[in-house]
Length: 122
Image (cartoon, rainbow, N blue to C red; front, side, top):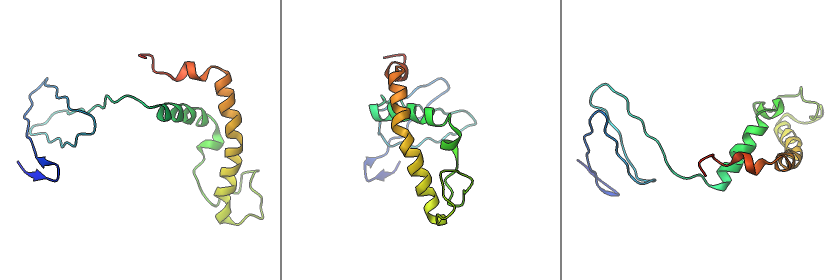
């Protein structure tokens, strides 16, 4: 057992079927001695920023233009002018996408967005 910047390490030997709980944010290392499966799950609550951003991400990914890979040479897009330098292409594309964002969010809100994104256990 070693010591690190957080103090002495603790070694725990677990057996088949054992469960170990420790608080969120606690540093840990998992090492299996035998062949087996180790599953780590975070049970932390979600914050509003994550909840809303994941819901909006889901909406945006339904649209082809939001799934495009960011690339400075994509000149197939009608919103990009042919006189644009290649370095400006991602900026111009992003500005075009961001201009649509308020309308997408408002449509989601009007259609009951808040009622649909809360986890069912709340």
